[in-house]
Image 1 (cartoon, one colour):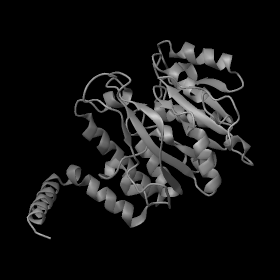
Image 2 (cartoon, helix red, strand yellow; image 1 turned 90 degrees about the vertical axis):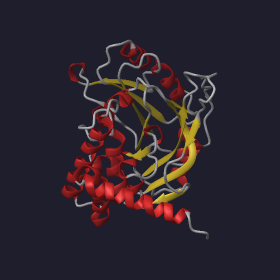
Image 3 (tube, helix red, strand yellow; image 1 turned 45 degrees about the vertical axis):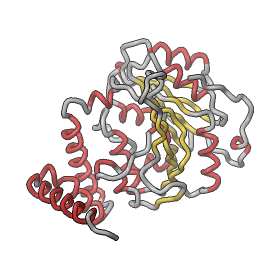
Image 4 (cartoon, helix red, strand yellow; image 1 turned 90 degrees about the horizontal axis):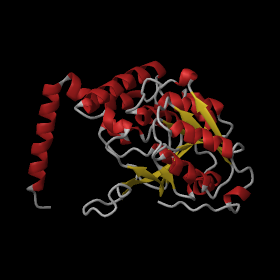
Length: 316
C-alpha cells in the first residue's frame, strides 16, 4: 500500500503551542513490514514529531533497517535497544521509548502496521479543541487485504471503539468497555495519543505483560485515571496475520490462561491502588465467575438463556 508524503506544513503545525509528539515503535523480527511502517510516519502531514525505534532483541534484518533509518533521518529518528540486545517484551520496549522521549505527548505504532497521513494532524486539532483531555483514541481498519487482496469473503473492516463516539469520558467510565470484562472493543494501540506526564503518573506499561494483554493492562491504568476522548475517525491499518506475536501467544487454548493472569493482575492492582471502588470489584467478580465458581457461572449463563428465550416469545 502506497503512503504519500505531504511535505508542506499542515494547519495543525500553525496552532499556537503545537505539541511535540514522541512516536514509539517497538519491533521484534519485523523485517518484512517495518520499512513501510516507518514510511507511514515520515508521510505524516504534521511535522512536529520524533520517532523512537525500540529493538526488542530482533535477530532478523529489522535491526539493520531501523539503524539505517536512524542514520538517514538523524534529526527525526532514533534507534534504541535493551542492554545486551535482550528481548524483554512489548511493554518494556514501550517504557524504554518513553524514558527517551522528548515530547509532551506520546503516540504508538506497531512495526507491522501503518498510519494514515493525517493521523497526527487530526489528533492535534482535537487537543486544541479539548485542551484538558489526557488521551485520544479512535477507530481502526482491520487490514486483511494486504495478504489476500483478491480472495472472496475477505474484506477490510473499520472497528469502532466499544463506546459512544465523539465524546469525552471521565475516569472510570470506560472500564467496563474492555473485552476482559465481556463488553466492547478496545482501541488499537496505534490510535493512542497520550500526555507524557500522565504516562509517568500511572507508571507506564506493565512489564510483566510481554506480548498478550499488554494493551488491556495499560488501558486499565489509563481508564481509571484519565479523561479520554473517543473519536469515530480511523487512523491506522491494523495488519491481520496469523503469525503475529500476540496471535501466537493466545493460540492452543492459551487465551483462557492469559485472561486469568490478566484478571489476577487487575485484582492486585485495584487493591494496591484503591482505584475503581465498588464498580471495579463488581466487574472483577463477574469476570472471575468462570474461574472461581464454574458451577455458578454455568447456572448464570443458563438462566440468562432461558430469560432470553422467554423474552423472544413475547409480543410487544
